[in-house]
Image (cartoon, rainbow, N blue to C red; front, side, top):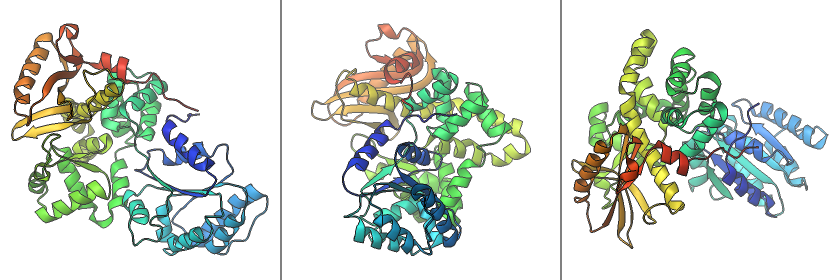
Length: 465
């Protein structure tokens, strides 16, 4: 039996909402497999609750499901001929309970009038009710529209909206270590290809040995459990326009990060690329738009995928899908040839998380207030952390490599040269984060490798129940 891991902050917030004397409407949204349903089930373990998975079937059949659930709770099976009957019954019940609608967006297919009906009963009765409604949705675009667009019936009704995100790197390592004793380097590489999605990390622990090549072969080549995963998720999210979105995501995963390069790669019109990029950032939250962390400017924006799994899938699986079908061994060799380069880019986000953690622990030369990438023409710095008030800065290079002492010193000298091109006057500190750094104890700059990350920024285990 797999125990529930993490989500301590979310569970605490839910308890606070539940313990308030008033009723509440709580929204969970986030990509599939991220653990929204498991979080809700963990929360209701000790509470009187009703759970409905909203399948795309007739309203009559869903009402039969609700009759069964209500019989379990009350000991009496009610007759529900409509959702009016359901809401009338629920709001008459005095004892506080939690009502969960899972895959809430599917009501649009069952009965598009459901949201208006829910809104009418909520507005009429929530002030005298004490119930807690939790609605869960995996289609990010639809869930955001239902609760955040002013023309929608449920706009403004949510007490709290939770964007349930994948585990952090630190949580992912603790999860993998707890499942199958992954060493830090292999857990890190596994995080680079699976991201922090609990379901995928669980599969890695169940089906593979604790090393990344075993994870890749078992989940993508041998069993092919995850070969179709991103496609299955995103076709449902994007609908009939999925091919255009997929082309853009492949371009970004392949390193085309500015709109003009994306348009050239995909052969899509520039206007279409701009429209899709905007929706992928704000509507679907699949990519992020970044500007140089100092001297920001939208004309200099770059786009990156938010999720390691989607990044890996579009860079390797989607791009070489045909090769995987006709010659899996050849496809695997193509992936392995470029995998270390991909790891280098993925390591930058881990390095950022590590610096944020050390900043909170006050283990850096100063407390920074901002951090991000920086670039200007052909010059790039992986990370700059700084505080505008004190003008303190930390210029950081990130390398997924085993570095000799000489290598490390050369990288820092180059970094010092690049830092002179950054706008403004700064009190400069320098940092190198790598897989392994020889002689790091003798360095006159901040030198961190996996050993330091394990010691200072990783959890021994995730809190579980």
